[in-house]
Length: 192
Ligand code: 5GP
Image 1 (cartoon, protein in one colour):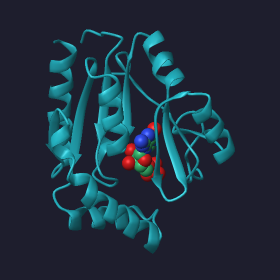
Image 2 (tube, helix red, strand yellow):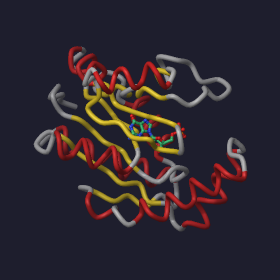
Image 3 (cartoon, helix red, strand yellow):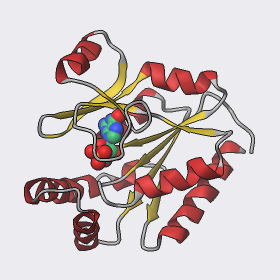
């Protein structure tokens, strides 16, 4: 697979749609071409999450300082009081390695990146088969409280209304099939 080091791949979806599993599949399969864009975030690390690998975990003060210093290409308060953002330095770090950043970000953030990099980004929206199915998946993950589950499900319904803004929609009914479909889209893009 050829690499143009100034392309960006955006994978977006409502939380629980399976985008993280798809991103992991791609990164494992193409470690020399693709690299995960590690976001900054102010939420607490979950068990087994490592700062610098999963997120750059930081305090709200630190995050806000980076906003004022214009260090983000996009940032959002994704959940009440929790900030997430893509650092310019992270995109550059990956481009410097001659790889392509893969961004696993929420829908609003993805729209901002598309606005900012209209000519060099490929966006995929991963759609859950239904909001009910998404709720079940989030419940089985066991990482949500009743309140955070409700917030994620509400947000998912809203985010689904933006799906047509993205280059491709992949319905994740079956994870293997969704990974294969995503892979094919990305290979075509890299070779274009
Ligand atoms: P989680 O807390 O489950 O790791 O992530 C919550 C949501 O934040 C997910 O939809 C994830 O894709 C999104 N997210 C992660 N990093 C970023 C980022 O840098 N910017 C934006 N806008 N969303 C992000």
